[in-house]
Image (cartoon, rainbow, N blue to C red; front, side):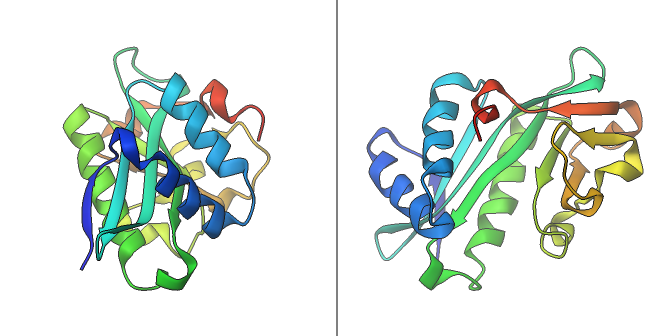
Length: 169
């Protein structure tokens, strides 16, 4: 069983280890460090099993070219689960908890750049269907969006930009 909770101050090393193991490179670990310093608001959750951090997910604000000025939109990135614990529902548990935390913050919706067969189960659909495009050159089916407030996707359009922390990736 996995327990999801907010990342605590002492979790940094374990979160870094999960990200390094899942992505097999330091980029996401460095991204999380930058996001912790720069992103506000932010949602950073960990999944614990048997007293060990086995997963991590981060949400940070994005901007949308044509969006109501008071609308908060979040980007899901990164999400990591220890390789030996993947395909056991930990990632899904983190995504659902993270979407709930974003909803509690008042976010209108969330975008993600991810696997087109994984994220639709959580309500994500290709963002291009809603007139949204990613600032990065990525296939349309990998850039997705979901609304947390009914009708939110009908009130936005244009280019989606991630925070400064993503610039060096």
